[in-house]
Amino acid sequence: MKYIVVTGGVVSGLGKGVTISSMGRLLQSCGLTVTSIKIDPYLNVDAGTMSPFEHGEVFVLDDGGESDLDLGNYERFLNIQLTSDHNITTGKIYREVILKERRGDYLGKTVQVVPHISNEIQEWIERVAQIPVNGKVADVCLIEVGGTVGDIESAIFLEALRQFQFRVGHENFLLCFVSLVPVISNEQKTKPTQHGVKSLLSLGLTPSIIFCRCTETLLPETKAKISQFCQVSTSHVLSVHDVTNVYQVPSLLESQHLHQLVSASLQLSLGEEAELGPWKEMADSIETFERSVTIALIGKYTGLQDSYLSVIKALKHAAIACSHILNLEWVEATHLENEERGKEYDDAWNKVKQADGVIVPGGFGNRGFKGKTLTAEYCRAQNKPYLGVCLGFQAMVVEYSRNVLQWSDANSTEFDENTAHPVVMFMPEIDKETMGGTMRLGARTTTFTHTHENGNLPVLQRLYGGHDKVQERHRHRYEVNPEYVDQIHGAGLLFVGRDDNRMEVAELSSHPYYVGCQYHPEFQSRPLKPSPPFLGLLLAATGGLEDYLQKQT
Image 1: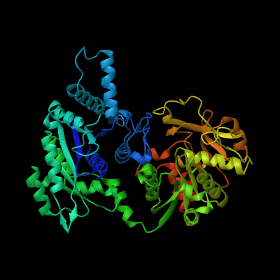
Image 2 (image 1 turned 90 degrees about the vertical axis):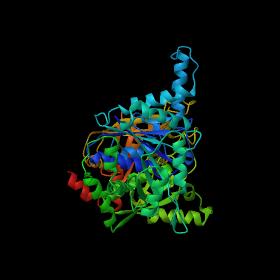
Image 3 (image 1 turned 180 degrees about the vertical axis):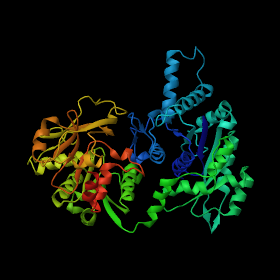
Image 4 (image 1 turned 45 degrees about the vertical axis):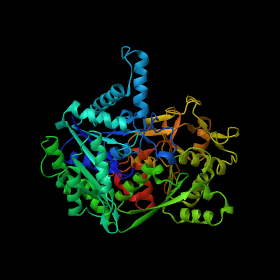
Protein backbone atom coordinates (compact mmCIF):
# COMPACT_ATOMS: atom_id res chain seq x y z
CA MET A 1 0.00 0.00 0.00
CA LYS A 2 1.23 3.46 -0.91
CA TYR A 3 0.25 6.42 1.26
CA ILE A 4 0.02 10.05 0.14
CA VAL A 5 -0.52 12.57 2.94
CA VAL A 6 -1.69 16.11 2.28
CA THR A 7 -1.37 18.81 4.94
CA GLY A 8 -1.97 22.54 4.73
CA GLY A 9 -0.54 25.74 6.10
CA VAL A 10 -1.18 29.48 6.50
CA VAL A 11 -5.01 29.36 6.54
CA SER A 12 -7.74 26.75 6.32
CA GLY A 13 -10.09 26.55 3.35
CA LEU A 14 -7.34 26.55 0.72
CA GLY A 15 -8.81 23.61 -1.11
CA LYS A 16 -6.92 20.61 0.25
CA GLY A 17 -10.01 18.50 -0.39
CA VAL A 18 -10.23 19.45 -4.07
CA THR A 19 -6.46 19.10 -4.45
CA ILE A 20 -6.30 15.60 -2.98
CA SER A 21 -9.44 14.52 -4.89
CA SER A 22 -7.96 15.81 -8.15
CA MET A 23 -4.72 13.99 -7.43
CA GLY A 24 -6.74 10.84 -6.88
CA ARG A 25 -8.61 11.29 -10.12
CA LEU A 26 -5.32 11.73 -11.96
CA LEU A 27 -3.89 8.55 -10.42
CA GLN A 28 -7.07 6.67 -11.35
CA SER A 29 -6.57 7.78 -14.94
CA CYS A 30 -3.17 6.09 -14.79
CA GLY A 31 -4.82 2.78 -13.88
CA LEU A 32 -4.46 2.85 -10.09
CA THR A 33 -7.19 2.10 -7.56
CA VAL A 34 -7.45 4.86 -4.99
CA THR A 35 -9.04 5.21 -1.55
CA SER A 36 -9.09 8.21 0.77
CA ILE A 37 -9.10 9.12 4.47
CA LYS A 38 -9.95 12.46 6.10
CA ILE A 39 -8.49 13.33 9.50
CA ASP A 40 -10.48 15.89 11.49
CA PRO A 41 -8.80 16.96 14.74
CA TYR A 42 -11.98 17.98 16.57
CA LEU A 43 -13.18 16.09 19.66
CA ASN A 44 -16.61 15.31 18.21
CA VAL A 45 -16.98 11.64 17.36
CA ASP A 46 -18.46 12.68 14.02
CA ALA A 47 -20.02 15.70 12.33
CA GLY A 48 -23.59 14.59 13.02
CA THR A 49 -24.35 16.91 15.91
CA MET A 50 -22.67 20.01 14.45
CA SER A 51 -24.64 22.98 13.17
CA PRO A 52 -24.27 23.60 9.43
CA PHE A 53 -23.12 27.11 10.37
CA GLU A 54 -20.33 25.55 12.41
CA HIS A 55 -18.85 23.09 9.94
CA GLY A 56 -20.84 23.09 6.70
CA GLU A 57 -23.00 20.19 5.63
CA VAL A 58 -22.97 16.75 7.17
CA PHE A 59 -22.16 14.24 4.43
CA VAL A 60 -23.92 10.90 4.89
CA LEU A 61 -22.24 7.67 3.80
CA ASP A 62 -23.75 4.35 2.75
CA ASP A 63 -23.16 2.80 6.17
CA GLY A 64 -24.91 5.69 7.89
CA GLY A 65 -21.75 7.50 8.91
CA GLU A 66 -22.18 11.26 9.37
CA SER A 67 -18.92 12.71 8.12
CA ASP A 68 -17.02 15.78 7.07
CA LEU A 69 -18.05 17.27 3.73
CA ASP A 70 -14.63 16.49 2.24
CA LEU A 71 -15.60 12.82 2.03
CA GLY A 72 -18.24 14.02 -0.41
CA ASN A 73 -15.49 15.56 -2.53
CA TYR A 74 -13.63 12.25 -2.53
CA GLU A 75 -16.70 10.23 -3.48
CA ARG A 76 -17.73 12.62 -6.25
CA PHE A 77 -14.29 12.99 -7.83
CA LEU A 78 -13.18 9.37 -7.42
CA ASN A 79 -16.60 7.70 -7.90
CA ILE A 80 -16.03 5.48 -4.85
CA GLN A 81 -18.04 4.63 -1.74
CA LEU A 82 -16.39 5.26 1.60
CA THR A 83 -17.33 4.25 5.16
CA SER A 84 -17.58 6.10 8.45
CA ASP A 85 -14.14 4.74 9.38
CA HIS A 86 -12.64 6.74 6.49
CA ASN A 87 -13.29 9.86 8.58
CA ILE A 88 -10.92 9.84 11.57
CA THR A 89 -11.62 12.27 14.41
CA THR A 90 -9.92 12.89 17.73
CA GLY A 91 -13.18 11.79 19.37
CA LYS A 92 -13.13 8.41 17.63
CA ILE A 93 -9.48 7.78 18.45
CA TYR A 94 -9.75 8.70 22.13
CA ARG A 95 -12.99 6.73 22.49
CA GLU A 96 -11.30 3.62 21.08
CA VAL A 97 -8.26 3.96 23.33
CA ILE A 98 -10.38 4.54 26.45
CA LEU A 99 -12.53 1.50 25.64
CA LYS A 100 -9.38 -0.61 25.29
CA GLU A 101 -8.07 0.72 28.61
CA ARG A 102 -11.36 -0.17 30.34
CA ARG A 103 -11.18 -3.70 28.92
CA GLY A 104 -7.63 -4.08 30.20
CA ASP A 105 -6.12 -4.40 26.71
CA TYR A 106 -3.00 -2.48 27.76
CA LEU A 107 -2.14 -4.99 30.50
CA GLY A 108 -1.89 -2.46 33.32
CA LYS A 109 0.40 -0.01 31.56
CA THR A 110 0.09 3.75 31.93
CA VAL A 111 -1.92 4.86 28.89
CA GLN A 112 -0.33 7.92 27.24
CA VAL A 113 -0.76 10.10 24.17
CA VAL A 114 2.49 8.62 22.85
CA PRO A 115 2.57 5.74 22.15
CA HIS A 116 -1.05 4.69 22.69
CA ILE A 117 -2.92 7.45 20.86
CA SER A 118 -0.31 7.74 18.12
CA ASN A 119 -0.30 3.95 17.64
CA GLU A 120 -4.10 3.87 17.46
CA ILE A 121 -4.02 6.47 14.68
CA GLN A 122 -1.47 4.48 12.69
CA GLU A 123 -3.35 1.21 13.15
CA TRP A 124 -6.61 2.90 12.14
CA ILE A 125 -5.04 4.22 8.93
CA GLU A 126 -3.58 0.83 8.00
CA ARG A 127 -6.85 -0.96 8.70
CA VAL A 128 -9.06 1.45 6.78
CA ALA A 129 -6.68 1.61 3.82
CA GLN A 130 -7.34 -2.10 3.27
CA ILE A 131 -11.14 -1.69 3.01
CA PRO A 132 -11.99 -2.48 -0.65
CA VAL A 133 -13.33 0.30 -2.84
CA ASN A 134 -15.51 -0.78 -5.74
CA GLY A 135 -14.65 -4.38 -4.93
CA LYS A 136 -10.87 -4.02 -4.87
CA VAL A 137 -8.23 -3.13 -2.29
CA ALA A 138 -6.66 0.17 -3.32
CA ASP A 139 -3.14 0.69 -4.60
CA VAL A 140 -2.90 4.16 -3.07
CA CYS A 141 -4.44 5.66 0.07
CA LEU A 142 -4.82 9.43 0.12
CA ILE A 143 -4.84 11.03 3.58
CA GLU A 144 -5.93 14.60 4.20
CA VAL A 145 -5.08 16.20 7.55
CA GLY A 146 -7.68 18.84 8.40
CA GLY A 147 -6.81 22.28 9.71
CA THR A 148 -3.37 23.83 9.36
CA VAL A 149 0.11 22.85 10.49
CA GLY A 150 0.74 24.36 13.90
CA ASP A 151 -2.77 23.84 15.26
CA ILE A 152 -2.68 22.34 18.75
CA GLU A 153 -5.54 19.99 17.86
CA SER A 154 -3.69 18.30 14.99
CA ALA A 155 -0.31 17.91 16.71
CA ILE A 156 -0.79 14.25 17.70
CA PHE A 157 -1.90 13.31 14.19
CA LEU A 158 1.23 14.87 12.69
CA GLU A 159 3.34 13.04 15.27
CA ALA A 160 1.60 9.79 14.35
CA LEU A 161 2.31 10.45 10.67
CA ARG A 162 5.96 11.20 11.49
CA GLN A 163 6.18 7.74 13.04
CA PHE A 164 4.10 6.25 10.24
CA GLN A 165 6.64 7.16 7.55
CA PHE A 166 9.15 4.82 9.21
CA ARG A 167 6.52 2.19 9.92
CA VAL A 168 5.62 1.78 6.22
CA GLY A 169 8.95 2.84 4.69
CA HIS A 170 9.89 5.99 2.79
CA GLU A 171 9.23 4.30 -0.55
CA ASN A 172 5.57 3.93 0.50
CA PHE A 173 5.04 7.37 2.03
CA LEU A 174 4.72 10.72 0.23
CA LEU A 175 4.04 13.98 2.06
CA CYS A 176 2.49 16.94 0.23
CA PHE A 177 1.88 20.46 1.50
CA VAL A 178 -0.80 22.91 0.33
CA SER A 179 0.04 26.54 0.96
CA LEU A 180 -1.14 30.02 0.04
CA VAL A 181 0.90 32.33 -2.15
CA PRO A 182 -0.78 35.71 -1.75
CA VAL A 183 -0.26 38.55 -4.18
CA ILE A 184 0.61 41.83 -2.48
CA SER A 185 1.57 44.93 -4.49
CA ASN A 186 1.59 42.77 -7.63
CA GLU A 187 4.19 40.44 -6.12
CA GLN A 188 3.73 36.76 -5.30
CA LYS A 189 4.80 36.35 -1.67
CA THR A 190 6.54 33.15 -0.54
CA LYS A 191 7.04 33.82 3.17
CA PRO A 192 3.77 32.11 4.29
CA THR A 193 4.84 28.95 2.46
CA GLN A 194 8.35 29.13 3.90
CA HIS A 195 7.02 29.41 7.45
CA GLY A 196 4.51 26.61 6.89
CA VAL A 197 7.19 24.25 5.64
CA LYS A 198 9.48 25.31 8.50
CA SER A 199 6.75 24.27 10.95
CA LEU A 200 6.47 20.89 9.24
CA LEU A 201 10.23 20.35 9.29
CA SER A 202 10.30 21.12 13.02
CA LEU A 203 7.86 18.23 13.50
CA GLY A 204 10.09 15.79 11.65
CA LEU A 205 8.07 15.86 8.42
CA THR A 206 9.56 16.85 5.08
CA PRO A 207 7.19 17.60 2.20
CA SER A 208 8.16 16.21 -1.19
CA ILE A 209 5.59 18.18 -3.21
CA ILE A 210 4.28 21.68 -2.49
CA PHE A 211 0.96 22.79 -3.99
CA CYS A 212 0.80 26.57 -4.16
CA ARG A 213 -2.64 28.14 -4.18
CA CYS A 214 -2.63 31.44 -5.99
CA THR A 215 -4.97 33.61 -8.01
CA GLU A 216 -2.65 33.48 -11.03
CA THR A 217 -0.13 30.98 -12.40
CA LEU A 218 2.92 30.70 -10.19
CA LEU A 219 5.84 32.58 -11.74
CA PRO A 220 9.14 30.74 -12.40
CA GLU A 221 11.02 33.02 -9.99
CA THR A 222 8.42 32.33 -7.28
CA LYS A 223 8.85 28.59 -7.79
CA ALA A 224 12.62 28.96 -7.63
CA LYS A 225 12.45 30.88 -4.35
CA ILE A 226 10.13 28.33 -2.73
CA SER A 227 12.38 25.53 -3.96
CA GLN A 228 15.46 27.21 -2.50
CA PHE A 229 14.01 27.82 0.96
CA CYS A 230 11.77 24.75 1.33
CA GLN A 231 14.20 21.99 0.33
CA VAL A 232 12.30 20.69 -2.72
CA SER A 233 13.24 20.79 -6.37
CA THR A 234 11.58 23.36 -8.60
CA SER A 235 9.67 20.64 -10.48
CA HIS A 236 8.02 19.64 -7.19
CA VAL A 237 6.56 23.12 -6.62
CA LEU A 238 3.20 23.04 -8.40
CA SER A 239 0.95 25.93 -9.28
CA VAL A 240 -2.66 25.32 -8.25
CA HIS A 241 -4.05 28.62 -9.43
CA ASP A 242 -7.67 29.60 -9.87
CA VAL A 243 -9.45 27.90 -12.76
CA THR A 244 -12.92 28.47 -14.20
CA ASN A 245 -14.27 25.19 -12.75
CA VAL A 246 -12.86 22.71 -10.24
CA TYR A 247 -13.16 19.82 -12.68
CA GLN A 248 -10.19 21.26 -14.55
CA VAL A 249 -7.84 20.77 -11.59
CA PRO A 250 -6.89 17.15 -12.51
CA SER A 251 -5.83 18.39 -15.97
CA LEU A 252 -3.96 21.28 -14.35
CA LEU A 253 -2.01 18.83 -12.20
CA GLU A 254 -1.42 16.51 -15.15
CA SER A 255 0.08 19.37 -17.16
CA GLN A 256 2.67 19.77 -14.40
CA HIS A 257 3.43 16.02 -14.43
CA LEU A 258 2.18 15.30 -10.92
CA HIS A 259 1.51 11.66 -11.79
CA GLN A 260 5.14 11.23 -12.83
CA LEU A 261 6.39 12.87 -9.63
CA VAL A 262 4.24 10.49 -7.59
CA SER A 263 5.38 7.52 -9.67
CA ALA A 264 9.03 8.34 -9.08
CA SER A 265 8.64 9.02 -5.35
CA LEU A 266 6.59 5.89 -4.61
CA GLN A 267 8.34 3.61 -7.12
CA LEU A 268 5.20 3.09 -9.19
CA SER A 269 5.25 2.06 -12.83
CA LEU A 270 3.01 4.72 -14.34
CA GLY A 271 3.05 5.75 -17.97
CA GLU A 272 3.94 9.26 -19.06
CA GLU A 273 0.40 10.01 -20.22
CA ALA A 274 -2.74 9.98 -18.08
CA GLU A 275 -6.07 9.04 -19.66
CA LEU A 276 -8.51 11.57 -18.22
CA GLY A 277 -10.78 10.99 -21.24
CA PRO A 278 -14.49 11.61 -20.42
CA TRP A 279 -13.57 13.64 -17.34
CA LYS A 280 -11.55 16.14 -19.37
CA GLU A 281 -14.26 16.30 -22.01
CA MET A 282 -16.81 17.11 -19.33
CA ALA A 283 -14.60 19.78 -17.73
CA ASP A 284 -13.85 21.41 -21.09
CA SER A 285 -17.46 21.28 -22.25
CA ILE A 286 -18.56 23.56 -19.43
CA GLU A 287 -16.72 26.43 -21.09
CA THR A 288 -18.81 26.03 -24.26
CA PHE A 289 -22.27 26.35 -22.68
CA GLU A 290 -24.21 29.37 -23.92
CA ARG A 291 -27.63 28.85 -22.31
CA SER A 292 -28.31 29.27 -18.60
CA VAL A 293 -30.93 27.93 -16.22
CA THR A 294 -32.01 29.58 -12.97
CA ILE A 295 -32.82 27.47 -9.92
CA ALA A 296 -34.06 28.99 -6.66
CA LEU A 297 -32.80 27.23 -3.54
CA ILE A 298 -35.09 27.80 -0.55
CA GLY A 299 -33.13 27.28 2.65
CA LYS A 300 -32.53 28.36 6.21
CA TYR A 301 -28.72 28.12 6.20
CA THR A 302 -28.17 30.37 3.17
CA GLY A 303 -25.58 32.41 5.06
CA LEU A 304 -23.08 29.58 4.56
CA GLN A 305 -23.21 27.92 1.16
CA ASP A 306 -21.17 24.93 2.40
CA SER A 307 -24.32 23.99 4.35
CA TYR A 308 -25.79 22.80 1.03
CA LEU A 309 -22.58 21.75 -0.70
CA SER A 310 -23.80 18.38 -2.00
CA VAL A 311 -27.08 19.94 -3.20
CA ILE A 312 -25.12 22.59 -5.10
CA LYS A 313 -22.85 19.96 -6.64
CA ALA A 314 -25.83 17.78 -7.63
CA LEU A 315 -27.48 20.79 -9.32
CA LYS A 316 -24.25 21.54 -11.18
CA HIS A 317 -23.85 17.92 -12.30
CA ALA A 318 -27.41 17.96 -13.67
CA ALA A 319 -26.87 21.33 -15.36
CA ILE A 320 -23.74 19.99 -17.06
CA ALA A 321 -25.73 17.00 -18.34
CA CYS A 322 -28.28 19.48 -19.75
CA SER A 323 -25.51 21.63 -21.29
CA HIS A 324 -26.59 24.69 -19.33
CA ILE A 325 -24.84 27.16 -17.06
CA LEU A 326 -26.35 26.98 -13.57
CA ASN A 327 -27.54 30.26 -12.11
CA LEU A 328 -28.34 29.56 -8.46
CA GLU A 329 -30.57 32.02 -6.61
CA TRP A 330 -30.39 31.83 -2.81
CA VAL A 331 -33.68 32.47 -1.03
CA GLU A 332 -33.88 32.67 2.76
CA ALA A 333 -37.05 30.74 3.63
CA THR A 334 -38.09 33.14 6.40
CA HIS A 335 -38.16 36.03 3.89
CA LEU A 336 -41.09 34.34 2.13
CA GLU A 337 -43.30 34.27 5.20
CA ASN A 338 -44.21 37.83 6.18
CA GLU A 339 -45.26 40.68 3.91
CA GLU A 340 -44.22 43.10 6.64
CA ARG A 341 -40.60 42.36 5.68
CA GLY A 342 -41.23 44.65 2.72
CA LYS A 343 -38.34 44.60 0.24
CA GLU A 344 -36.90 41.34 1.62
CA TYR A 345 -40.28 39.67 1.10
CA ASP A 346 -40.73 41.07 -2.42
CA ASP A 347 -37.18 40.22 -3.49
CA ALA A 348 -37.49 36.66 -2.18
CA TRP A 349 -40.76 35.99 -4.00
CA ASN A 350 -39.45 37.60 -7.20
CA LYS A 351 -36.56 35.14 -7.17
CA VAL A 352 -38.99 32.22 -6.80
CA LYS A 353 -41.32 33.48 -9.50
CA GLN A 354 -38.54 34.24 -12.00
CA ALA A 355 -36.70 30.96 -11.47
CA ASP A 356 -36.98 28.14 -14.00
CA GLY A 357 -37.17 25.61 -11.17
CA VAL A 358 -37.13 25.41 -7.38
CA ILE A 359 -35.46 23.12 -4.89
CA VAL A 360 -36.29 22.90 -1.18
CA PRO A 361 -33.53 20.86 0.51
CA GLY A 362 -33.42 19.22 3.92
CA GLY A 363 -33.11 20.92 7.28
CA PHE A 364 -34.15 20.81 10.91
CA GLY A 365 -36.25 23.07 13.11
CA ASN A 366 -39.30 25.27 12.73
CA ARG A 367 -37.59 28.38 11.39
CA GLY A 368 -38.40 28.82 7.71
CA PHE A 369 -40.80 25.86 7.42
CA LYS A 370 -43.75 28.12 6.64
CA GLY A 371 -41.77 29.66 3.78
CA LYS A 372 -41.03 26.19 2.43
CA THR A 373 -44.70 25.17 2.49
CA LEU A 374 -45.67 28.43 0.77
CA THR A 375 -43.08 27.72 -1.91
CA ALA A 376 -44.43 24.19 -2.39
CA GLU A 377 -47.94 25.58 -2.76
CA TYR A 378 -46.86 28.20 -5.29
CA CYS A 379 -44.93 25.70 -7.42
CA ARG A 380 -47.80 23.21 -7.35
CA ALA A 381 -50.39 25.81 -8.37
CA GLN A 382 -48.21 27.53 -10.97
CA ASN A 383 -46.80 24.35 -12.58
CA LYS A 384 -43.25 25.38 -11.75
CA PRO A 385 -40.72 22.51 -11.56
CA TYR A 386 -40.12 21.62 -7.93
CA LEU A 387 -37.91 19.15 -6.09
CA GLY A 388 -38.37 18.65 -2.35
CA VAL A 389 -35.68 16.75 -0.45
CA CYS A 390 -36.29 15.38 3.06
CA LEU A 391 -37.88 18.37 4.83
CA GLY A 392 -38.78 19.76 1.39
CA PHE A 393 -40.67 16.51 0.74
CA GLN A 394 -42.46 16.83 4.07
CA ALA A 395 -43.35 20.45 3.21
CA MET A 396 -45.12 19.14 0.10
CA VAL A 397 -47.16 16.72 2.19
CA VAL A 398 -48.11 19.35 4.78
CA GLU A 399 -49.03 21.92 2.11
CA TYR A 400 -51.14 19.45 0.13
CA SER A 401 -52.95 18.33 3.25
CA ARG A 402 -53.77 21.90 4.21
CA ASN A 403 -54.82 23.27 0.83
CA VAL A 404 -56.20 20.28 -1.10
CA LEU A 405 -57.60 18.05 1.64
CA GLN A 406 -58.62 21.17 3.61
CA TRP A 407 -56.96 20.07 6.85
CA SER A 408 -56.03 23.62 7.75
CA ASP A 409 -54.07 22.64 10.86
CA ALA A 410 -52.14 19.79 9.21
CA ASN A 411 -48.53 19.83 10.34
CA SER A 412 -45.47 17.87 11.35
CA THR A 413 -45.21 16.93 15.00
CA GLU A 414 -41.72 18.39 14.83
CA PHE A 415 -43.39 21.80 14.79
CA ASP A 416 -46.78 21.15 16.47
CA GLU A 417 -47.13 18.12 18.71
CA ASN A 418 -50.82 18.86 19.31
CA THR A 419 -52.02 19.19 15.71
CA ALA A 420 -55.25 17.34 14.93
CA HIS A 421 -53.76 16.17 11.63
CA PRO A 422 -50.15 15.01 12.27
CA VAL A 423 -49.41 14.11 8.65
CA VAL A 424 -45.68 13.96 9.46
CA MET A 425 -44.65 12.27 12.68
CA PHE A 426 -41.62 11.34 14.78
CA MET A 427 -40.38 7.89 13.85
CA PRO A 428 -41.30 5.51 16.70
CA GLU A 429 -37.97 3.69 16.91
CA ILE A 430 -35.81 6.84 17.14
CA ASP A 431 -34.16 7.70 20.48
CA LYS A 432 -35.65 10.98 21.73
CA GLU A 433 -32.88 11.63 24.25
CA THR A 434 -29.61 10.92 22.44
CA MET A 435 -28.83 13.12 19.41
CA GLY A 436 -25.69 11.68 17.85
CA GLY A 437 -26.07 8.84 15.36
CA THR A 438 -29.69 8.05 16.24
CA MET A 439 -31.51 9.14 13.08
CA ARG A 440 -32.54 6.87 10.23
CA LEU A 441 -29.21 6.99 8.48
CA GLY A 442 -27.47 5.54 5.44
CA ALA A 443 -28.46 3.63 2.33
CA ARG A 444 -31.98 2.17 2.24
CA THR A 445 -34.01 0.59 -0.53
CA THR A 446 -36.93 2.41 -2.11
CA THR A 447 -39.37 0.32 -4.16
CA PHE A 448 -41.55 1.94 -6.80
CA THR A 449 -44.93 0.48 -5.88
CA HIS A 450 -47.51 2.65 -7.67
CA THR A 451 -48.05 4.01 -11.16
CA HIS A 452 -49.82 7.19 -12.19
CA GLU A 453 -53.59 7.16 -12.70
CA ASN A 454 -53.11 6.62 -16.45
CA GLY A 455 -50.92 3.58 -15.88
CA ASN A 456 -47.63 5.34 -16.68
CA LEU A 457 -44.56 4.64 -14.61
CA PRO A 458 -43.66 7.40 -12.13
CA VAL A 459 -41.45 10.10 -13.61
CA LEU A 460 -38.74 9.44 -11.05
CA GLN A 461 -38.75 5.71 -11.78
CA ARG A 462 -38.26 6.47 -15.47
CA LEU A 463 -35.38 8.82 -14.58
CA TYR A 464 -33.82 5.93 -12.65
CA GLY A 465 -33.90 3.89 -15.86
CA GLY A 466 -37.11 2.03 -15.05
CA HIS A 467 -35.64 0.11 -12.11
CA ASP A 468 -38.16 -1.17 -9.58
CA LYS A 469 -35.80 -0.60 -6.65
CA VAL A 470 -33.17 2.05 -5.93
CA GLN A 471 -30.73 2.59 -3.07
CA GLU A 472 -30.39 6.10 -1.66
CA ARG A 473 -29.06 7.61 1.56
CA HIS A 474 -31.20 8.93 4.39
CA ARG A 475 -30.89 11.29 7.35
CA HIS A 476 -34.15 12.01 9.17
CA ARG A 477 -36.15 11.56 12.38
CA TYR A 478 -39.61 12.35 10.99
CA GLU A 479 -41.66 10.58 8.34
CA VAL A 480 -45.06 10.70 6.66
CA ASN A 481 -47.68 9.35 9.06
CA PRO A 482 -48.94 5.97 7.70
CA GLU A 483 -52.44 6.72 8.99
CA TYR A 484 -52.85 9.52 6.44
CA VAL A 485 -51.15 7.92 3.44
CA ASP A 486 -54.26 6.52 1.74
CA GLN A 487 -56.19 9.80 2.01
CA ILE A 488 -53.33 11.93 0.69
CA HIS A 489 -52.49 9.45 -2.05
CA GLY A 490 -56.17 9.19 -3.03
CA ALA A 491 -56.39 12.99 -3.28
CA GLY A 492 -53.70 13.05 -5.95
CA LEU A 493 -50.32 13.43 -4.26
CA LEU A 494 -49.11 9.99 -5.22
CA PHE A 495 -46.72 8.12 -2.95
CA VAL A 496 -45.14 6.14 -5.77
CA GLY A 497 -41.99 5.03 -3.95
CA ARG A 498 -42.03 3.28 -0.58
CA ASP A 499 -39.92 1.32 1.88
CA ASP A 500 -42.57 -1.02 3.32
CA ASN A 501 -44.90 1.38 5.14
CA ARG A 502 -42.49 4.33 4.87
CA MET A 503 -43.15 6.91 2.16
CA GLU A 504 -40.07 7.71 0.10
CA VAL A 505 -41.21 9.39 -3.15
CA ALA A 506 -44.22 11.57 -3.97
CA GLU A 507 -45.30 12.99 -7.35
CA LEU A 508 -48.15 14.87 -8.98
CA SER A 509 -49.04 13.26 -12.29
CA SER A 510 -50.67 16.43 -13.66
CA HIS A 511 -47.60 18.60 -13.11
CA PRO A 512 -44.52 19.16 -15.32
CA TYR A 513 -42.26 18.10 -12.42
CA TYR A 514 -43.46 18.11 -8.83
CA VAL A 515 -41.35 15.52 -7.03
CA GLY A 516 -40.40 14.94 -3.43
CA CYS A 517 -38.16 12.33 -1.85
CA GLN A 518 -37.57 11.53 1.80
CA TYR A 519 -34.01 10.44 1.05
CA HIS A 520 -31.05 12.65 0.09
CA PRO A 521 -30.21 11.89 -3.54
CA GLU A 522 -27.53 14.59 -3.63
CA PHE A 523 -25.09 12.36 -1.73
CA GLN A 524 -24.73 9.95 -4.65
CA SER A 525 -24.58 12.45 -7.49
CA ARG A 526 -21.43 12.34 -9.63
CA PRO A 527 -20.06 14.75 -12.27
CA LEU A 528 -20.36 12.07 -14.96
CA LYS A 529 -23.53 10.52 -13.53
CA PRO A 530 -25.93 13.13 -12.10
CA SER A 531 -28.54 12.19 -9.52
CA PRO A 532 -31.85 11.29 -11.27
CA PRO A 533 -34.11 13.55 -9.13
CA PHE A 534 -31.81 16.52 -9.75
CA LEU A 535 -31.48 15.67 -13.43
CA GLY A 536 -35.28 15.59 -13.68
CA LEU A 537 -35.53 19.05 -12.10
CA LEU A 538 -32.98 20.55 -14.47
CA LEU A 539 -34.50 18.83 -17.52
CA ALA A 540 -37.94 20.16 -16.58
CA ALA A 541 -36.50 23.63 -15.94
CA THR A 542 -34.81 23.66 -19.35
CA GLY A 543 -37.77 22.18 -21.24
CA GLY A 544 -36.09 18.89 -22.07
CA LEU A 545 -37.76 16.42 -19.73
CA GLU A 546 -40.38 14.97 -22.10
CA ASP A 547 -37.83 14.36 -24.88
CA TYR A 548 -35.46 12.75 -22.42
CA LEU A 549 -38.13 10.42 -21.02
CA GLN A 550 -39.27 9.40 -24.51
CA LYS A 551 -35.71 8.40 -25.34
CA GLN A 552 -35.58 6.26 -22.19
CA THR A 553 -38.57 4.13 -23.25
